[in-house]
Image (cartoon, rainbow, N blue to C red; front, side, top):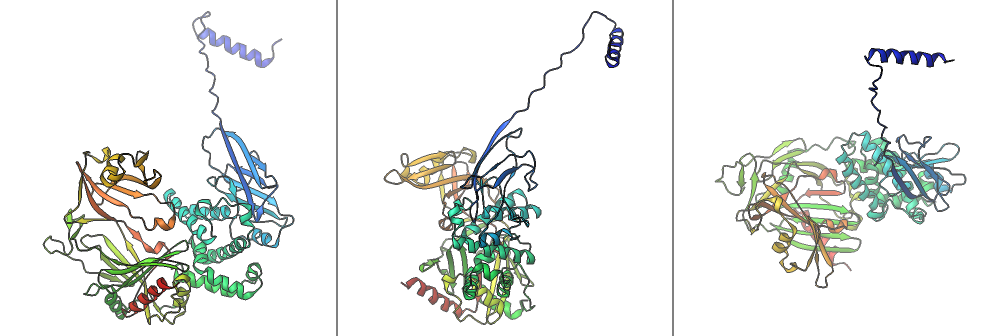
Amino acid sequence: MFKPKLLSLLIATSLLTACSGSDDKDDTTPIPEPTPPTEYAHNVTGQVSYIGAIAGANVCVDLNQDLSCSEGEPSTTTDTDGKYQIDWKSETEKPNYYLLANWVDSAPSSSRSALAVSAASGYANTSTTGNVNIVALPDHAGYINALTNIEFSRYRKMIEADLTPQQVIEFRAKLKNLYASGFKQVEADLFSLSPEITLQPTFIDTLLLHDYLLNLTNERTVEILAAIEVLIAAFEAFENLILGYGFGTEAYLQTNPVAVTNKVESTLVSFGYMEAPVDDKAMNSVDWDNVYSSMHNQAGELHVLSIQTVRNSHFITLDYGVDKQSLTGVISGKVAMLIEKTSQEDTETECWNEPMQKWINSTRNDQGDVSKEPIIEGNLLKTVYAGTDVEIQMNFQKYQNSAADWQDLLVNLPADLKLAPLAWPAQIYRMDLKQVADVICRNEAPIKHETDVATASQMYSKLLVQLFWSYAYPDGYIQDTPNKFTLLDSFGQPEAQYEWGISTSPSNEQLLTITQIVEDPIEREMVSSHYYLVSPYLLTEVELNKAFDTSVNKQFYRFTYDSSFSNTLYNHFKSLATQP
């Protein structure tokens, strides 16, 4: 006997067959078998350390990025050295995920406990049972540690701030450089911390101090990089405070010291992250007269000191009132290498003026270009790059040498420069400069090189080696990639590597850029690119002055002052260079 459901199905089928007009013809179309989804194999190997290697930690691949190890997400447990391996498969070729490590710190050392309960890192936390959780992004080769956790907290801040993907890349690169400097690590290996490094007292103390500063700065500013910038700028001052306390970093910070809070606030003020507590910063007519006499006088004399710090090296340029002459070099520790530099302005230079659609020499008055008068808006002076309409902004902050904010800024200046003991003028002006767009310039009689290519798309490395490194052609170089080559020394060993590319210049012409590849960040500061406009069978040498904004670099300082102080600074830096 048929079951009711089966009987109904047979009746329905017979009715359909009768309606079709034929009892002996099968019109059923075969249903294709569904294609099974593609599976991709994934593998993550790495190591978990915090204050030493963490054995027995649970590590998971947080695929839904909810900062928890959910059921079904790939996971494993670390071995006695904190190492782990996770293998899994998914239908996604390149999945997005976080790496999470958590463990119960049943018998922590005092420093580990202090770090674990700190909420400063944002995602390192404990419950009353001692659970510790830290995070890493997937591009840290499987390492999960204190620095990956700190970087992750800053990364989340970037996402919350709605930064573009490119801005996130740029912020992370700057962050990496700053943390390498702050924690005295090699930038390339910054996040690949060995357990031995995390056990070093100096590393633990720096980590404790950083987490403490992160809490303080988070309460006072939303700036993502503020904590590490304060740490680097005022590290020596914090170190002296801790040494003066006499009981170590952890014990000192547990007292919630007012001195540290004051130093953080004053440093944030000097960096422009907080407003100064007093409103005596507005530039007046006397201030502008001082600035003009030191920077825009008729004789063309400049009285300006510029300082830029990269890692533990400090690049200085001192314009001391001699036309076209400056003192420039690098100071690091007891090493000071300074040279007298003469600017090469004997040749007539012209720059591309976009509105006029021609090259303008600003020293000539026969080209229709009208010089624009500077505009003053509060503490901001606006002018233009000579011969162009590209705006240059100079934002001034004035200080009195006896005021607390100037003394705080002096302390934040690199100690190697020994600037604090100098008798500074009564009034000092710090300036940030911004050039809003790229500017391209060239000699009025530009240097040109003949080529065998009609367009930029036909450019090739062998041609560049023949033109600019003829001694290395044909056997003294190696073609690495289509746009990269290595020059060899007389022994056939790599000497220098270059890469080149084509872009559009501010004059709307094709621009060839050749740049030496330098890994060391100190040496990289000394490398300049070479630029050439590309036209049929010709390369023309030009200078590209890129847009910039010094206010984004808190380790860059530029000061002007009474012209008489230039001689004091000149003798001071010369004495540093001659000291044994």
